[in-house]
Image (cartoon, rainbow, N blue to C red; front, side):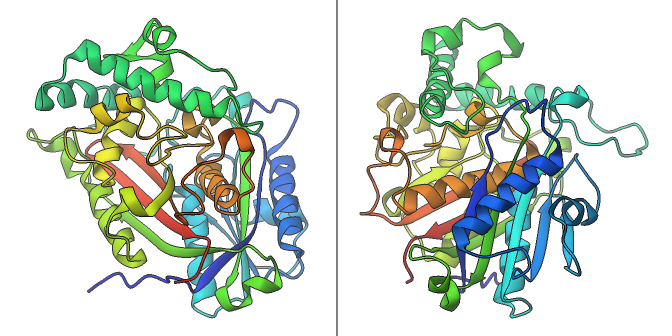
Length: 398
C-alpha cells in the first residue's frame, strides 16, 4: 500500500484569517463570520455557491451546527472535525480530498477557537473517562525532556543550548512583531528570554507558546477551475497525516531527540510532492513551535539539516527571515498563541501570502519566487504519543 496523494488536483483560491488575541468582546460566531467573509471575498464567491463545509474546533463547539448557525447556512453539509493540535489542518485535508474525489466542486475549511474568557490556561484536552492510569504530566513537562536529551546525545552544553532555544523564541517574536494579526507583537532578546522564570525543567515562560482566540478559513476547488476565482491560486502538492500509537510513553528507551511520527509524516509528504531536498526546494516553512525544543528537533525531523546540527544552524541564522530556509516568518505559535482549531489554517494563510508575493515587505521571504513551495506542519499530543500533519503548497503547477 502507498499514499498516492492529490498533487496538483486541488487549489486554494481564497483565504481569511482574523487577528489572534484575547477576544473578550467577540464570540466564536463573530470570529467565524470574519474569517469566512474574508475567504469568500478573496475568492470572489459566496456561501451559497460553496458546496460543503468542514469546521475544525477542539474546544469551542460541537457538530456542524456551530458553523451553520454562525454563517446562516441553509441546506449545506457541514462536518465538524477534531484531531488534537492538527484540527484546523484536518479540516483542510478533508475538504481537499472531498473536492479531489469529485464529490464537490468547491468547499470551505474553517477553524476556530474561543477559549480565553473561559479561564482556559493551557493545552489540556477535554477530560475523557479512563481507568486512572494515564499520565498526569503537563505538556510543558513532557516537552521539557527534549532539551536535556538533545544536549546529552549531541554533547551540547546545557547553558549554551538554553541560549540556542532562546534564539528560536527571539527569532519568532521578531517576525511576529511585524505581523498585525499576531497576539504578541514585541521583540524579545535572547538575554531577556533567558532571564525569564522557569516553567518546567530548562523551559522558561518564553520557551512556551501561549493560547489565544482566533479563526482562519480557506476555499478549495479543483485545480482546473482555480483561475475562475483568482489569478494567483495556491496548489495542494501534499497532505500527509500520521497518528502514533502511544507506545513511546511506555518505552524506557524512547529517544526524546526525534519524533517518529513527524519523520514518517515528512517522508510521505515529500514523496507525494516529489520533494527530494527540502532545504533547497522549500521557500519557507511554518512549523509547530509549541515549545522551543520542539522547533529545534523539527528542523532535523523535517530534513532541514543533519542530525545533531540544528543547534548550530539556529545559531548561524539559517532559519531566520533572511536565512537559507525561513521558518515561521509570520511569528509562529510563539507570537500568535495557539487556538487549536485555527492554527493549522493560520499557517497556510502565511504560505498563501508569501507564495502570492503579498506578505508585507518587512517580513517577506527572500527565497521566493526562486523557490515556489511552502511547508506547513502541526503536531498534537506529546513526545511518545503524537499526531502529525504536513502540507506542501505551491504557487505553480508541476
